[in-house]
Image 1 (cartoon, one colour):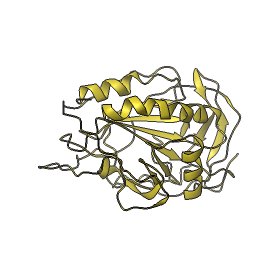
Image 2 (cartoon, rainbow, N blue to C red; image 1 turned 180 degrees about the vertical axis):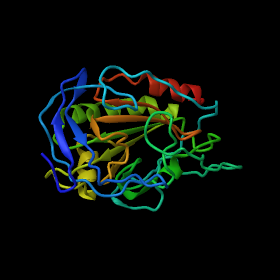
Image 3 (cartoon, rainbow, N blue to C red; image 1 turned 60 degrees about the horizontal axis):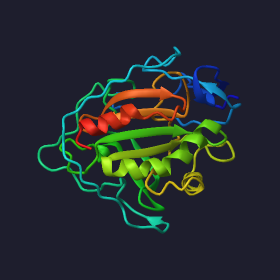
Image 4 (cartoon, rainbow, N blue to C red; image 1 turned 45 degrees about the horizontal axis):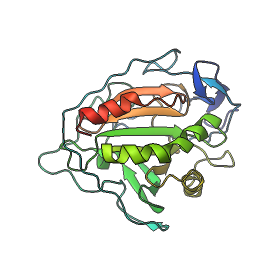
Length: 269
């Protein structure tokens, strides 16, 4: 299946449980400020087995984990609203970093070892309930642990993907453990239930369907975390909030988050 931008879904036959491979078209350009141009309209492929990959993306097989960051104390602050509404704040831990926290310089990117761009921004439903708002990469930056964020998981998922649904189903229980550790999760949906471009209603449906109260569920029409021309879903991206560097990427669902938890512990969680 291919849309007007040339985004193609391919069956995946590698090691981990995954659904689809998405091919980024050459006309979706990477800009110097760290943003991606163009929008994607991504359908669904057949459920199969998927693989894990590091920044190279094209090769299969397990990727080596790496994490970085300085130790810090954890203090958890979550949004309290449980009803649907709107909000300008966009992250579960909403207090601002104090002191001289300046967003890290590049090189910007979303592959292993790169600093995720400060320009990334998504619309959707925030952690702490069903509050509609905006989430930015800058608001996840926590260089001094003042926000209580010790590790970030970006989960790029899509409707009709069995492995994505399997992972989403596991998150409510995991969040009971992860919230006190300072682990924050951002689900990025790259399509809608009807296989069209992602929508706010689709984000709300995903959040409600899987009970993702403590997860930010956002619409991601630009497929922000795609680090190479072809990636599979779910695409997991670990980010160190002290440096905003990508420490690990994985294509497919394994149920093993030891690297994410180790990053949180290293940062004080």
